[in-house]
Amino acid sequence: MLSAGLPQGTVPKLERPGPLRERVYDALLELITTRALGPGQHLVESELAGHLGVSRQPVREALQRLNTEGWVDLRPAQGAFVHEPTEEEADQLLSVRTLLEAEAARLAAANSGRAGIEALQELCSQGERAVAADDVDLAVATNTAFHAKVMELAGNLVLAELAAQVDRRVRWYYTPVARRRGTQSWIEHRALIEAISARDELRATEVMRAHTEHTRTTYHQREKG
Image (cartoon, rainbow, N blue to C red):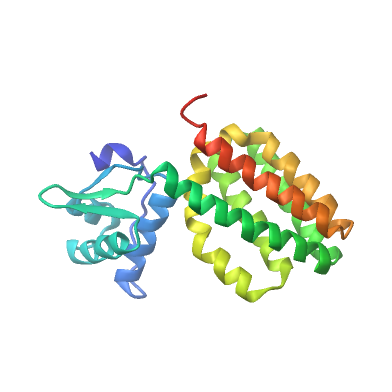
């Protein structure tokens, strides 16, 4: 049941200002990408509405939109379920992510100044502290922020727009392997910062490509270890 799958306090009541349908959609998408609502989980409109403090109508509209975008499956006579990504879906998405992130790393090495590098170092320190504290949610959020900062430092708006299209799904796939990636992920981030700081475009590209490939491999091995 939904209520058993969401920890107390996971879903705050929505504030009324702003388009309600958008707020419900954003809330449900956040719960899915953080895996508070896990793949395959049954989504009951009335329960979701109760958790969010809204009527069933905006929940129904949000579920239909999420279905269109591939986050939710609507099954006849059964209801709505969080989509369960196939290995092929994950592999294709993470492969595209590698291409985008590797180019971002190259551009960041070419364009970054001291302030950008210091921002990456601070995010890396935050991520290392999150791993040490076994705070998976914070580690995932900081990982997302770190990669977003690299993309920002790249200075290519088209590349950033393309990356934004896959960002939530990357987070969705990364969450279940974040603990397993653990310290090693942040060691790789440190190596990336060194390459960017040295303005070594080739090295930055190689480090980022290897880093994202490690995540992709770990995702596919998650059920084996």
